[in-house]
Length: 444
Image 1: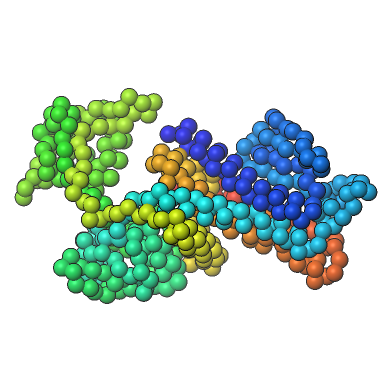
Image 2 (image 1 turned 180 degrees about the vertical axis):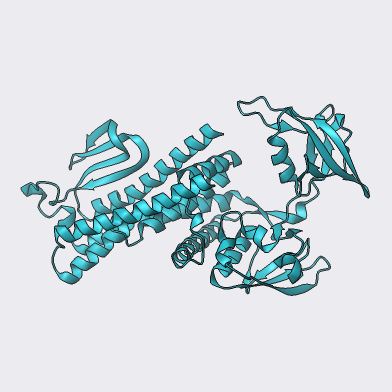
């Protein structure tokens, strides 16, 4: 899994940064700028080719975690007479801004493309049904019940858990009151209000939202639908219809919990508490394991498959898929911008800033989960890359756009000293963000 995570991470970063830099490159060429080098990766080139009338050098470099486009610029290069007017800083300010915007724009375009494929292929979607309710919690006190289906959150219609989580986080970031409109199991509709006390930013920490609110999304219960003949469960006397309650005194609330707990105990003897009929029982089971470099425990049971009412295949025709991809890209971009802004005000936890280890972890998980999940991961990272690069920090595209705007207002180039001061400030901000990201990775 570690190797998969590393490879998926390198592929994702390499692809998305290359797309970003290609946006700068192609728009720069269109605007009449001379490109000296287009490099995929950093460091020493391991392959290069010079081509085109401008004799542009195209490189594949040793460190595959980035890339860059080098334009002709009289601040760094000697300009030949035939190249007069083709340097980056010789072109109109509107052209320079277009080039700077093109990188983030191509990241957003890639996200639209990725979502289009996802919606065209169809993706299994879990309906926003409430699962386990924690005793003496906000959810329990407000009257939420197991099996309630969320229809709206603060008048925002939700059709799946992804949109529900986004709406909940947005509400928590703005205020202390969450208004749910739910459909009860008897088909009646009810409005339920959760009043949040204390520091609401704690709910926005990774993994803290549902625990803090006191409820969890519905998942298939740990109800045995099939017992593998000769497997650990069969030898332990478990039967179809038994519900697993705990493994080695670790509470099991869903089949996902069961699978994860068992996977971490390859070849071990475990104590299983289960419910059969109206009574609880205990039994020991000697787990088997997979034949892998990192073996996983196997109990030898399968899920009861009668839960089709809780999920559906979300699939669209091409025109509708394109429309949905635009909506999803806009929604994800807006969510990213708002959450980052709320981090600056302290309404959202800064622990949400992910470093390379966390990104690599999720890259590996999504790659193993299949094409649609990996494309979704790439789309989200691409949107984040686009948003981050638009921040008004001198080392980023957004900061360079600020420079160009100031130059337009001033009517002449900014002084080298002013630009150097801005770069130093930008480096400090980026180092601070990187430090927070690495700290969060290590803390987690």
